[in-house]
Image (cartoon, rainbow, N blue to C red):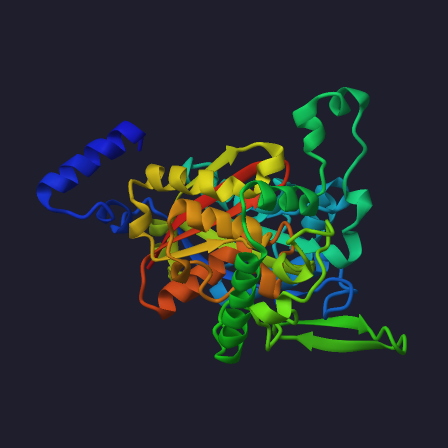
Length: 417
């Protein structure tokens, strides 16, 4: 539906007394629906439960969980898109292999993609759009990252002289912590506000974890793990996020040294954790889901992706969210839950305040500060996190969004069944 058609529809709805949200909450055979969305636990980079597990092996676990939970015949899945940032070659070869190991047949195509921190969301949106265009009937959008095994200086290539001599191009490779520190100063985001937000993320996450609110979205994995003290290899089952910590307060965070500048405000406690994990989302048309007897948990409505200044990459959600809402024909007040990735407390706080969103609507179970941000995985992870919370609270409309390295933002609108 074009924007002009959406506006005409909104006018008609107003005249008929219908709500603006009626357009996206109504059920139609051509809706692009989600019938399963899950993730592995997220574990601490370099020392957590998945520190010795390859990204492709994490993906195998997520794929197997998706097949098992949905009951889908793997032969019906025509295409899989996997978002990932760090693997050599984009992970294309091992992700195809992972799909085969998980039980998808040779007929299921696989590709990898990299749009930095929104890679997982981009993968899901690409599959949704392929279904909407009639290219495929059933597909999987996924995301994965092993930051333990692949994060580091080698993840960014050297720039040529041509790129180095262009100011904005050169800014694309400024380390995110450094540019986020500068953004916090430029946009006057106090350390007190950042620490308060970060503490809230930890407190919400530990409360949710203790109450079992992550259990539905998490698929446990059994992996090999080497004890760093003894060198002994063990087999362990990872069932929960291991980065969530109890007792974190704004006061305790205020004592941590700044990481990027002596007089800075950003530190390990108010930035996203380096983590390992995978997530996967199964999509198809509503008519297909009903024919196959698949349980529908929600639907994809629309998405937006935008560019911003490389040095201001953190403001991406501020620009992307309003565009996604406009495309959906709804207002920010119509949204029940916002899942906005907590790359840094500084950028997340700024975006929330500039958008005028109630803090209680944002990341109700905490976010990446509390349980991690495996780069290419987060966008797919948010889908399962959002739908389980919408279901639990009997709410309807959600938005997922994140800032993106080099200066971009992405957002998507979803409706729970």
